[in-house]
Length: 190
Image (cartoon, rainbow, N blue to C red; front, side, top):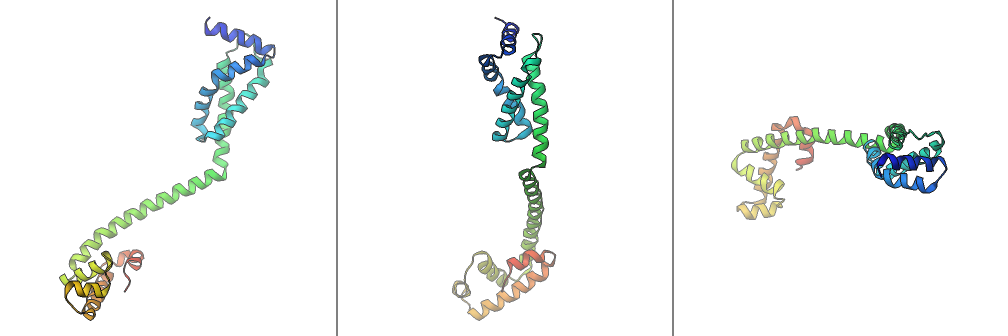
């Protein structure tokens, strides 16, 4: 039996209010309708609702069908209208607005990431401008998180010398990195 003959039998049965024919239409087209509508909604639960609405609308439209109608064409005409309405609803939904705000926040974070990468490059250059002892003390204190007493013991110098070297090194870094004040404030505390 060809698909045209099957469609004609289904159409005849639908015109006679056959629920079995409607179930067959549902089984045949639900997956395809779901895939089509999901491309508009991008939400599984909402897509399922839209597909149910399409099938209900098709059932309600059944008496306007003729034996020459194409079930697939009628279903997808209804689907197109429902999917477009679903898309419009999605655009106006608070959840979508939250998503847009989140996307904008990510874009801001990307810019901040670029700023942070620039900061790291400049920090490396600034660190290289410090004296050898200042650089070592700053690295141990701020990057390795050693205490002043641990640095003094590690380098064989007094704690007072560590504090002086750290203070001098951080002051120079602040001066070298003035363009990155918001990051420097977080990064460099005496």
